[in-house]
Length: 306
Image (tube, rainbow, N blue to C red):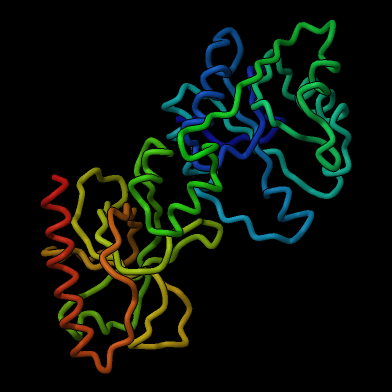
């Protein structure tokens, strides 16, 4: 398994692509294929952390994949190292030419650069593929330019995946990602009300930088840490309008027909299909009745996909 490394630890010379590669969708995979084909150099992805827009504009950039989640995905695609370049205001002032020279050529010792046709970089994003062409002229460096990938609905992009997930369209998000979307969290203590009404739930603590799908109640597969066994589950994502309307959004998971002590463990969740939107019930009894209906609906969903 590859590991996260700093620029000073890089195994060089490299065949490299620079970018966030968030989601590693089909367009990203085509670009990565050009990095890997130069097998005489170390296939490398270089990403900025944190995201430049977080540093420059204070924007929260929720990720489809956190850096550590990318590792097994990149490994399966033939990438040997993921280099995290610390992004700060000083680096943001580096011109495109100086970024190429100081970071990619001198520090990462790249011999092959792969970029999408719309790639922009450097101070105020003034650098593009023509900047690279001029900068590497007369140097022993190959430039691979990969066309943008489109389908009948438009350009395949991370933004499009996010929009699909927000709109609960997990199936089309899966097609663009070429894998099911998932997220993980540590099980923490909740209020215990689920157990009271006969539906014990695991409360997940999710990394605040992780993008989550739209709020609602879902049928979902759950996986305990290190296990590939699918556990059929019902997941509630969002606030708790009946129990505590003022509480922040939360992720709660009920394992169907399983009684496992999960406290302190890490659970991976793979939402499959939205069952319903959240509803405020008049009392806990009404909520309990609905949860059992949700469980029956989830079972039907799982029976139809197995």
